[in-house]
Amino acid sequence: MHKSLITPQTRIGEFLDNYPEHEELLISLSPAFQKLRNPVLRRTIGRVATFQQVAVVGNIPLETIINSLRIAAGQNQTTEIMSSHNNLEEKPSWFNTTSISETSDARQMLQAGQHPLADVLARTAELQTGQIFELITPFTPMPLIEKVMDKGFNAFVQTVSDSEVHTYFSKK
Image (cartoon, rainbow, N blue to C red; front, side):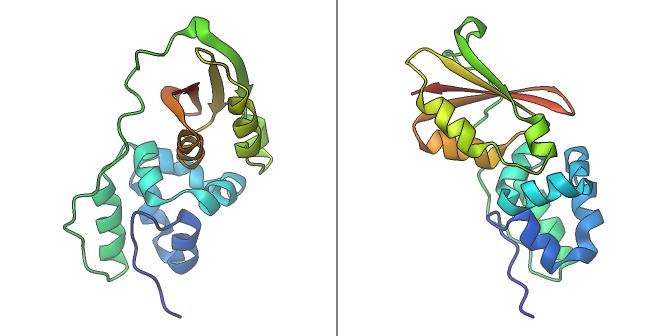
């Protein structure tokens, strides 16, 4: 079986399928990665999240993840500097709690193995200029954030605790 090169675009699930023996190494890289032990979250996150996205969630340099896993898998390290996402945790000028028009708590949906993307895209599409949509999740939902941003929205992420993250979206 040909095992593909580990890159920032490699999905977590694909990595764990190809290299199940390195699961503990991956989980050890960041306390945030402990969530991969939950089979439901693992299926949900693993299917969509890439290393580039989990680097943001785990607050760990992308190079550290990629090179640690490549060494363990017997692949060459990369010297390429990998850009991370612009800082989504820096409070933007458009953010104001009084502008939040709707809140969705997706924690139960995710626990049940469902993905809130379609719901979030529908709700953000209805936003008027100046309104903010708030999404509550147990982790930073980078794949979802990127998809919503691709539709022309700003995003701001506030980590409340290890199991509660608030993501805010507004029209650009």
